[in-house]
Length: 436
Ligand SMILES: NC(=O)c1ccc[n+]([C@@H]2O[C@H](COP(=O)([O-])OP(=O)(O)OC[C@H]3O[C@@H](n4cnc5c(N)ncnc54)[C@H](O)[C@@H]3O)[C@@H](O)[C@H]2O)c1
Ligand SMILES: O=c1ccn([C@@H]2O[C@H](COP(=O)(O)OP(=O)(O)O[C@H]3O[C@H](CO)[C@@H](O)[C@H](O)[C@H]3O)[C@@H](O)[C@H]2O)c(=O)[nH]1
Image: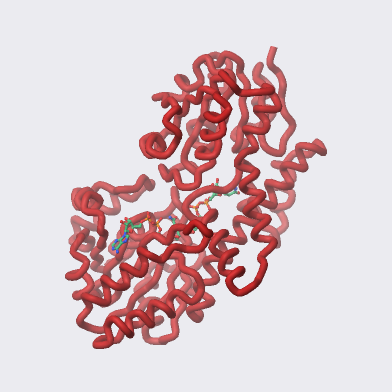
């Protein structure tokens, strides 16, 4: 089976590597020449734990190849996975430009029947539109379209691909569905087969539901702060109910990343297009926008104003174990701190290079956490990297001008913080004001 993957971002590269690892011959196509050149040398264009050794192993076994020559790859393919980006348009809808370009590229190259599998997250109805495009652009061949939405998380993408909860296959054609199911069977993950529109909706509904859980727990956290309850205790007690589930109840400064923000907006737009006002989802988005500003609010309340204050930012990526800066809370926080005329010194173990190209130019970067904290008036933790969670709390006391910490990810147990002369504000928990 000759498999081609179009687009080598988080989804395409991980899919290509994983399919090669279970024994398929996989050619990964990307339009970005520099990226392809690096991948050919075994270098991953994304930071993702475990990906490079797996890439190299499968390249050496002659199962995994990288090319910019899409035309040739599509001509030889039995199955083509589309994994190009579907970013958001200004009105919140999904931008299908890359996807449609990929469809045109494939249509103008294929010379034999082929199955096209859409991994990119696309609005309901898109796969049928793709099918129509193929019928018009490549009437000489039979192209079956299958929806196979992706559920991997950045930072644990390899693990998720081999240990996912389900593989969703949406198809009109039974034979195409069976071929795709056979390809994925070696992963040993339950396969859920359904119709195309339901498969497309499963992806958006799953992300919207998880985003709802996060905004819900963040609202409960905000109330906890005012009524003197502790969100960690509340989430633990709630999570013991199997109907609720213990995961995705971590309160913090909201969700970011390449998926939840854009997919929630796209689903709200899908609903609006059929005159359905998705009020609940709109509230989830609004709550998240406010939550990303929570630490600024707390700092302004503590200091009055932030002008001239030196603020150390710990963590810039939208979550740990990735260098992805898309929709990270740090984008909002740095913009506001700069507008407030604070001096911002930032540190992230992995995302600093990417951060430099997207954060305001006023941000200063430190090489180490200790350097960021040096003589700072306050620290803000935006990402719960292990390096911060495991940091000896005495470092804040030793390095900072005033050890005032605003923790947006509840990295420390309150009883640990209480042993130090630190002022500590977290999310949904009592503040600690031990500063002398
Ligand atoms: N990032 C995630 O964690 C994740 C998880 C699940 C689903 N998704 C969805 O998967 C899709 C891809 O997301 P991503 O984060 O991997 O994207 P990405 O932006 O990281 O990568 C997309 C890649 O496609 C390439 N590309 C664009 N047009 C092309 C073309 N015509 N031919 C060949 N290559 C082309 C780009 O150069 C880029 O390398 C999106 O729809 C996204 O919503 C993403
Ligand atoms: O209890 C929680 C869990 C997550 N988050 C935040 O939510 C965001 C997203 O986290 P996560 O879901 O772990 O990362 P993603 O890589 O964005 O993965 C999500 O988005 C992908 C793209 O669609 C899907 O494939 C995954 O299933 C889905 O989990 C991050 O900012 C987290 O900090 C919280 O604030 N509290």
